[in-house]
Image (cartoon, rainbow, N blue to C red; front, side, top):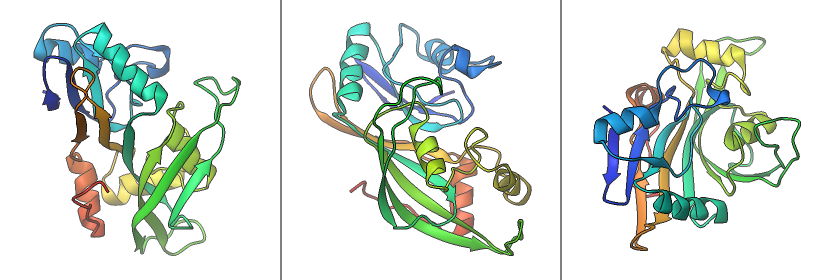
Length: 235
Protein backbone atom coordinates (compact mmCIF):
# COMPACT_ATOMS: atom_id res chain seq x y z
CA UNK A 1 0.00 0.00 0.00
CA UNK A 2 1.22 3.45 -0.88
CA UNK A 3 1.33 5.93 2.01
CA UNK A 4 -1.25 8.67 1.44
CA UNK A 5 -0.18 11.98 3.00
CA UNK A 6 -3.24 13.98 1.96
CA UNK A 7 -6.43 13.21 0.03
CA UNK A 8 -9.44 15.26 -1.01
CA UNK A 9 -11.75 15.51 -4.02
CA UNK A 10 -9.17 17.43 -6.04
CA UNK A 11 -5.79 15.95 -5.27
CA UNK A 12 -3.78 13.25 -3.54
CA UNK A 13 -0.31 13.54 -2.00
CA UNK A 14 1.63 10.29 -1.91
CA UNK A 15 4.87 9.40 -0.13
CA UNK A 16 6.62 7.85 -3.12
CA UNK A 17 8.97 4.97 -2.20
CA UNK A 18 12.53 4.98 -3.49
CA UNK A 19 13.16 2.82 -6.57
CA UNK A 20 9.55 2.90 -7.77
CA UNK A 21 9.07 4.44 -11.21
CA UNK A 22 6.25 6.98 -11.38
CA UNK A 23 5.01 6.10 -14.87
CA UNK A 24 6.07 4.38 -18.07
CA UNK A 25 8.72 6.22 -20.04
CA UNK A 26 11.92 5.55 -21.94
CA UNK A 27 13.88 6.88 -18.93
CA UNK A 28 12.87 4.10 -16.51
CA UNK A 29 14.35 1.20 -18.47
CA UNK A 30 13.17 -2.24 -17.36
CA UNK A 31 10.76 -1.12 -14.64
CA UNK A 32 7.85 -3.54 -14.19
CA UNK A 33 5.84 -1.61 -11.61
CA UNK A 34 4.61 1.99 -11.67
CA UNK A 35 3.23 4.30 -9.00
CA UNK A 36 0.27 5.52 -11.08
CA UNK A 37 -0.93 1.95 -11.65
CA UNK A 38 -0.64 1.05 -7.98
CA UNK A 39 -2.48 4.24 -7.00
CA UNK A 40 -5.35 3.55 -9.39
CA UNK A 41 -5.75 0.07 -7.94
CA UNK A 42 -5.52 1.38 -4.37
CA UNK A 43 -7.93 4.32 -4.66
CA UNK A 44 -9.93 3.72 -7.81
CA UNK A 45 -10.92 6.39 -10.31
CA UNK A 46 -8.76 8.60 -12.48
CA UNK A 47 -5.37 9.90 -11.39
CA UNK A 48 -3.24 12.44 -13.27
CA UNK A 49 0.36 13.30 -12.45
CA UNK A 50 0.95 16.90 -11.44
CA UNK A 51 4.74 16.52 -11.34
CA UNK A 52 7.36 13.77 -11.23
CA UNK A 53 10.20 12.41 -9.13
CA UNK A 54 13.14 10.34 -10.31
CA UNK A 55 12.72 6.61 -9.87
CA UNK A 56 15.45 6.52 -7.18
CA UNK A 57 14.07 9.54 -5.26
CA UNK A 58 11.48 9.19 -2.50
CA UNK A 59 9.05 11.69 -1.00
CA UNK A 60 6.08 13.96 -1.67
CA UNK A 61 4.40 13.44 -5.03
CA UNK A 62 1.19 15.24 -6.04
CA UNK A 63 -1.45 13.47 -8.10
CA UNK A 64 -4.61 15.18 -9.36
CA UNK A 65 -8.09 13.71 -9.69
CA UNK A 66 -8.75 15.55 -12.97
CA UNK A 67 -6.82 16.95 -15.91
CA UNK A 68 -7.91 20.46 -14.97
CA UNK A 69 -6.48 20.19 -11.44
CA UNK A 70 -3.30 18.63 -12.83
CA UNK A 71 -2.95 21.59 -15.21
CA UNK A 72 -3.42 24.11 -12.39
CA UNK A 73 -0.81 22.39 -10.26
CA UNK A 74 1.48 22.20 -13.26
CA UNK A 75 1.21 25.97 -13.65
CA UNK A 76 2.44 26.40 -10.08
CA UNK A 77 5.42 24.15 -10.75
CA UNK A 78 6.22 25.88 -14.04
CA UNK A 79 5.72 29.34 -12.55
CA UNK A 80 7.79 28.50 -9.46
CA UNK A 81 4.97 29.53 -7.13
CA UNK A 82 5.64 26.71 -4.69
CA UNK A 83 8.52 25.60 -2.46
CA UNK A 84 10.21 22.22 -2.67
CA UNK A 85 12.58 21.06 0.06
CA UNK A 86 14.70 17.94 -0.28
CA UNK A 87 16.96 16.07 2.12
CA UNK A 88 20.21 14.71 0.70
CA UNK A 89 23.16 12.86 2.21
CA UNK A 90 26.30 13.81 0.30
CA UNK A 91 30.00 13.06 0.22
CA UNK A 92 32.12 15.66 2.00
CA UNK A 93 31.21 18.82 3.89
CA UNK A 94 30.09 21.54 1.47
CA UNK A 95 31.58 24.98 2.07
CA UNK A 96 30.13 27.45 2.73
CA UNK A 97 27.52 25.85 4.98
CA UNK A 98 24.81 27.72 3.05
CA UNK A 99 25.14 28.33 -0.63
CA UNK A 100 23.63 28.59 -4.09
CA UNK A 101 24.52 26.45 -7.09
CA UNK A 102 23.80 28.51 -10.19
CA UNK A 103 24.66 26.28 -13.14
CA UNK A 104 22.64 25.85 -16.36
CA UNK A 105 21.49 22.32 -17.15
CA UNK A 106 20.20 20.47 -20.23
CA UNK A 107 16.97 18.48 -20.29
CA UNK A 108 16.80 14.69 -20.29
CA UNK A 109 19.17 14.67 -23.28
CA UNK A 110 22.66 15.81 -22.34
CA UNK A 111 23.17 17.21 -25.84
CA UNK A 112 20.12 19.46 -25.56
CA UNK A 113 20.21 23.20 -24.89
CA UNK A 114 21.11 24.30 -21.37
CA UNK A 115 18.69 26.42 -19.35
CA UNK A 116 19.23 28.39 -16.19
CA UNK A 117 18.99 26.31 -13.02
CA UNK A 118 19.51 27.36 -9.40
CA UNK A 119 19.57 25.25 -6.24
CA UNK A 120 19.93 26.61 -2.71
CA UNK A 121 21.42 24.33 -0.08
CA UNK A 122 21.95 24.39 3.69
CA UNK A 123 24.23 22.04 5.58
CA UNK A 124 22.16 20.62 8.45
CA UNK A 125 24.62 18.13 9.98
CA UNK A 126 27.99 16.47 9.43
CA UNK A 127 29.72 13.25 10.39
CA UNK A 128 33.16 11.74 10.06
CA UNK A 129 33.29 7.93 9.98
CA UNK A 130 36.48 5.91 10.70
CA UNK A 131 36.43 3.88 7.49
CA UNK A 132 39.42 3.96 5.16
CA UNK A 133 38.74 4.61 1.49
CA UNK A 134 41.41 5.45 -1.04
CA UNK A 135 44.07 7.62 0.58
CA UNK A 136 41.81 8.85 3.38
CA UNK A 137 41.55 6.97 6.72
CA UNK A 138 38.23 8.66 7.52
CA UNK A 139 35.28 9.74 5.39
CA UNK A 140 33.19 12.88 5.73
CA UNK A 141 29.48 13.10 4.93
CA UNK A 142 26.84 15.78 5.34
CA UNK A 143 23.07 16.06 5.52
CA UNK A 144 21.83 18.86 3.28
CA UNK A 145 18.54 20.67 2.84
CA UNK A 146 18.25 21.46 -0.87
CA UNK A 147 15.69 23.82 -2.38
CA UNK A 148 15.61 24.04 -6.19
CA UNK A 149 14.19 27.18 -7.76
CA UNK A 150 13.59 25.41 -11.05
CA UNK A 151 12.78 21.81 -11.90
CA UNK A 152 15.33 20.68 -14.44
CA UNK A 153 15.94 16.99 -15.09
CA UNK A 154 17.85 15.53 -12.10
CA UNK A 155 18.66 19.09 -11.05
CA UNK A 156 19.66 18.51 -7.42
CA UNK A 157 21.69 15.43 -8.27
CA UNK A 158 23.57 17.20 -11.06
CA UNK A 159 24.12 20.40 -9.08
CA UNK A 160 25.54 18.60 -6.05
CA UNK A 161 27.80 16.52 -8.27
CA UNK A 162 28.89 19.74 -10.00
CA UNK A 163 30.19 21.13 -6.68
CA UNK A 164 31.90 17.78 -5.94
CA UNK A 165 29.47 16.70 -3.21
CA UNK A 166 27.39 14.02 -4.97
CA UNK A 167 24.38 12.36 -3.40
CA UNK A 168 25.15 8.99 -1.84
CA UNK A 169 23.61 6.17 -3.85
CA UNK A 170 23.42 8.16 -7.08
CA UNK A 171 24.55 5.67 -9.72
CA UNK A 172 24.52 8.17 -12.60
CA UNK A 173 26.17 11.24 -11.06
CA UNK A 174 27.70 9.98 -7.82
CA UNK A 175 30.78 8.14 -6.62
CA UNK A 176 30.75 4.35 -6.95
CA UNK A 177 33.29 3.83 -4.17
CA UNK A 178 31.21 5.76 -1.63
CA UNK A 179 28.00 4.12 -2.82
CA UNK A 180 29.59 0.71 -2.19
CA UNK A 181 30.80 1.84 1.24
CA UNK A 182 27.22 2.63 2.27
CA UNK A 183 26.00 -0.74 1.05
CA UNK A 184 28.78 -2.71 2.74
CA UNK A 185 29.07 -0.86 6.06
CA UNK A 186 25.61 0.64 6.58
CA UNK A 187 23.35 -1.74 4.65
CA UNK A 188 21.97 1.21 2.68
CA UNK A 189 20.89 0.25 -0.85
CA UNK A 190 18.98 3.37 -1.92
CA UNK A 191 19.85 6.82 -3.18
CA UNK A 192 19.72 9.25 -0.25
CA UNK A 193 17.59 11.97 -1.84
CA UNK A 194 14.12 12.59 -0.40
CA UNK A 195 11.46 15.13 -1.40
CA UNK A 196 10.74 16.12 2.19
CA UNK A 197 8.36 19.08 2.14
CA UNK A 198 6.19 20.73 -0.47
CA UNK A 199 4.37 24.03 0.00
CA UNK A 200 1.76 25.10 -2.56
CA UNK A 201 -1.65 26.71 -3.01
CA UNK A 202 -4.51 24.23 -3.21
CA UNK A 203 -5.65 24.41 -6.84
CA UNK A 204 -9.36 24.28 -5.96
CA UNK A 205 -9.54 26.41 -2.79
CA UNK A 206 -6.42 28.58 -2.90
CA UNK A 207 -5.54 27.55 0.67
CA UNK A 208 -1.83 27.40 1.46
CA UNK A 209 -0.75 23.82 2.11
CA UNK A 210 2.48 22.26 3.31
CA UNK A 211 2.87 18.51 3.10
CA UNK A 212 5.73 16.59 4.69
CA UNK A 213 6.76 13.06 3.75
CA UNK A 214 8.29 10.94 6.54
CA UNK A 215 11.56 9.19 5.80
CA UNK A 216 11.52 5.46 5.10
CA UNK A 217 13.17 3.03 7.52
CA UNK A 218 16.51 2.84 5.69
CA UNK A 219 16.93 6.63 5.56
CA UNK A 220 15.70 7.19 9.12
CA UNK A 221 18.00 4.48 10.52
CA UNK A 222 21.00 6.05 8.84
CA UNK A 223 20.22 9.47 10.34
CA UNK A 224 19.84 7.87 13.76
CA UNK A 225 23.15 6.04 13.34
CA UNK A 226 24.91 9.34 12.62
CA UNK A 227 23.10 11.14 15.45
CA UNK A 228 21.36 13.49 13.02
CA UNK A 229 17.96 15.00 13.84
CA UNK A 230 15.57 17.08 11.76
CA UNK A 231 13.99 20.38 12.67
CA UNK A 232 10.30 20.38 13.50
CA UNK A 233 9.63 23.43 11.33
CA UNK A 234 10.44 24.01 7.69
CA UNK A 235 11.44 27.61 8.32
